[in-house]
Structure formats: C-alpha cells, structure tokens
Image 1 (spheres, rainbow, N blue to C red):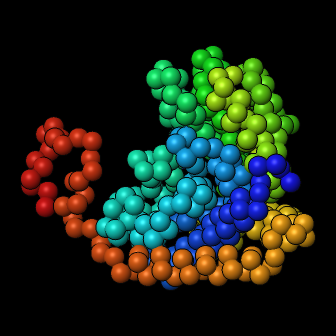
Image 2 (cartoon, rainbow, N blue to C red):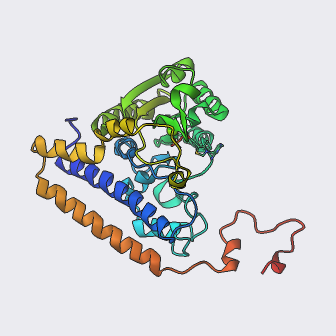
Image 3 (cartoon, helix red, strand yellow):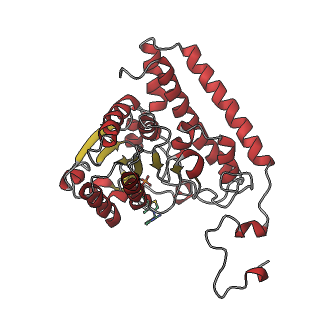
Length: 337
Ligand SMILES: Cc1ncc(C[n+]2csc(CCOP(=O)(O)OP(=O)(O)O)c2C)c(N)n1
Ligand SMILES: [Mg+2]
C-alpha cells in the first residue's frame, strides 16, 4: 500500500467511492420516478479516477470535472442535499435550481466546476486558470478531467500546446471509459496509447489502471508534486469503464454497441467492491467497519433526498438573478414577467 494511505485515508476513499456510486444510482432512480428531468450521465464504474486524483490534490487546488464527475463533490465534502436539490431544480440547490442536471458548479466554495455539458469545454478554461496561477505566483495547480472522446477536440490540443509552451501548472486527466457515446476509442483516436499525445507536445504522459484507486492516487501524487514545483504540465490517462449507458435515455434506445461479456469483464474490477475487499484482506480494516461506512452513507442519502423533496421551485423572477449582465440592450427587462 502507498505510504500515504493510512487506515483513515483508505477508509475515507472507500466512503467516497461508495457514496458517489450510491449518489449516482439514486439520481437514476429518482429520474425514473419523475423527480429529476432531462437525461442523466452517471459515471458508474469510473469513480476511482476522480477519487484517486482528488485525494492527491490540496483543497484549494482548482478542479474542472467532466459531465461524469459526481465523485468530485463527494471528495470535496459537498453537502449532497444541495446537489440533489439542484438536480430537482429547487431554489435550495447549489445553483438555486438554475443549473439542473447538467450544469452545476461549486466554484466559489469548493474551487471546482462540476457537470458541464460542453464536451472538453473546461479544458481551455482550466488551462487559463493555470495561467492565472502562474502569473499571480500562486502555489495552487489546476486539474482538468475529460473523456477519451473529448481528447480529440481541437481546443484540447491548443490547450496542451499552450500549457507546455508556457510551462503551466496543470494536470490533464483523461477518463478513458473506452467509448464516446457509442464510438469505441480505437475508432476515434489515431494514437495507440492516448498518453502519446502529451509526448507529442513535449510533456509527460502516464497511463494508469483507472479501476485501481491506489494506482491512480500514486500517479496523481507524483504528478501533483512535479507540477506544483513548476515543471510544467502532465497528462494522466486513466483506463476505466462505465458500467451504465452513456445516458439514462440509452435504455429505451436499446443500442447494441458493446457486449454483455465486455461489461461483465470490467465489472469484475469494480473499485467499489475490490477496494474494500483488499482493505479487509490486508487487515487494514474489518468488514464490520466497511458495513458501518455503507450504513452511514445510506443515511446521508436519505436525508439529502428528503431535503431536496421538501425544497421550493424558483420563482420566475429568480431567472434574472445571478447574472453577469444586468442590462440587456434592446430588451425591455421589466416587461418580461
Ligand atoms: C462540444 C460538444 N460536442 C458534442 C457533444 C455531445 N456529446 C455529449 S457527451 C459526448 C461523448 C463524450 O465522450 P467522452 O469525451 O469520451 O466522455 P464520456 O461521455 O465517455 O464520459 C458527446 C459527443 C457535446 N455535449 N458537446
Ligand atoms: Mg468516453
């Protein structure tokens, strides 16, 4: 076991893996029951990537997570009730019900943007954040997560090139779940190893087992140390898998783009079960302690869902709050409602 991973940290990482998994499953159930509208993009199966990387960062580092990055909220100890309330579109949500299922963030309090529907859109933004850290001489670094499909977007390449040219303090984390919707990574990407792309821009690219939270932590810890010391960007490619469909609507579309055998093979390496099994096997904790973490997480979820259900929908005029602009040329603002 990595030397930093003492019992408390190991168990905390299990709590984060389990709570994220159950949070995502609960969101899907609530969507099916009509409490949450719109398609949902859970990261079921991919939790270890975000958990491993974020545990290696400091709380004040800047994090941009992908549309499957639900684990980031849990690792940064966000109130899950605020997240459910946001998904329900309630005023009490972390973005006052205006972000909904696909656009919420906790940038001010937790220093991360979560869930954003624009594939790869956060990559140039967080390259800019890294540039800001460098110009201001801050010790914080920027970490941005994106998918294997996003990796072929043009602005990712512009960002990687700029990050190396200016030696920016940024870690590019590719959550390679093998597919972009239904397109297999081998079909969309010319490089055999996605990490070769970083090498083409002159910086280090690392491939890591995205189902093994310890290995991800280890790669991230080394990378964070190097990047914080000013040695320029690093790319971590975490090879992982989503057990669920691309989005919840996939179940009715009945798409056949991968076999059940392939899904089952990856499920054998599910971090939500292999990690606690290892902790018990290596006598780091007991199965009773694991069960206690699960029970506490279930309780937290029940309270969070109750909070969201009891919340209120925003008023129409709330739509004009929290805007950057207060005047709209040519639009009679007062006449809207
Ligand atoms: C700029 C942009 N292009 C296309 C889409 C539609 N879209 C949403 S998710 C997705 C697939 C992204 O694949 P990947 O980057 O591998 O992330 P994953 O969904 O697998 O986590 C696409 C094409 C979008 N939301 N934004
Ligand atoms: Mg993908």
